[in-house]
Image (cartoon, rainbow, N blue to C red; front, side, top):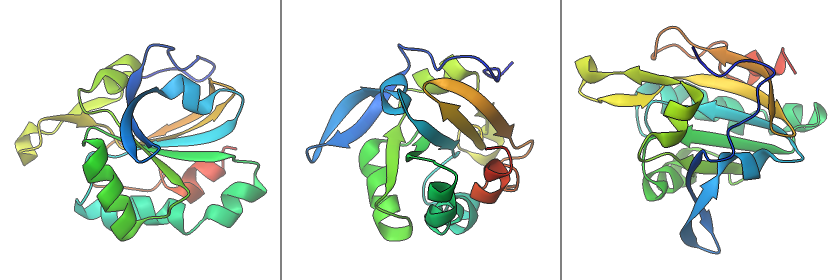
Length: 161
């Protein structure tokens, strides 16, 4: 069962971000502490739905996100931080924080994984979006199919903020 609305982001759920131009271990809970944040998960950078729909939905809706008081937007994937950063530079927005869950530890802690072995991708982060306020999940939208980006898009999660 995925992390429940009303639950706190696990303190020990860590991945990687870029800090001062270098990869650095980072706890997801630290990134959302004291903030109104959106965390969205993708199965893989440079894949069709992630590149053509999911990331652009957040990049193009920065104004609407800010109007709802969202202070930070975080994209989470099981890709490594260098891949995520290159993907965001090519297709996204500098204001989106890339959070690499290369080992799947955060994905497992949130119970938001999916087996995409049939597509040759193995275990990945499920497509989702969540609104988090001061470390507590207030709304969670999880797509049933990895190729669909509706309720996990920026407009989909903004309806619940």
